[in-house]
Image (cartoon, rainbow, N blue to C red; front, side, top):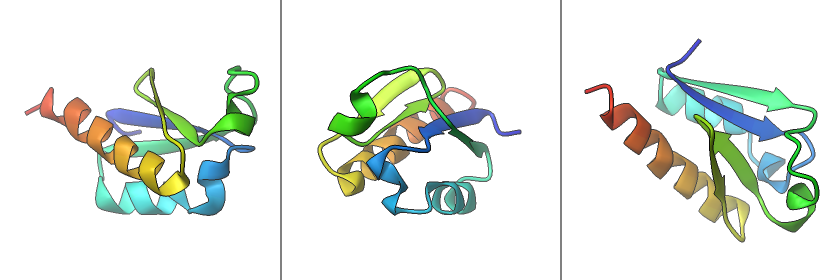
Length: 81
């Protein structure tokens, strides 16, 4: 398991991308977990989002959200350098 965990809700629009394949190939330290529900009721319907090491990351578009997820991963990894 990675030192950075990215939780993704299966119903979220971020899943237009294969987030697991993208992030785990870019960052060997990352594990992406697909969850049936992350208990942020209604958020899935409103915007793409993920939870990166317990911090909620969201945006208006899946592309923007993926970029914000990458930035948060970089912040988390900087802690271990």
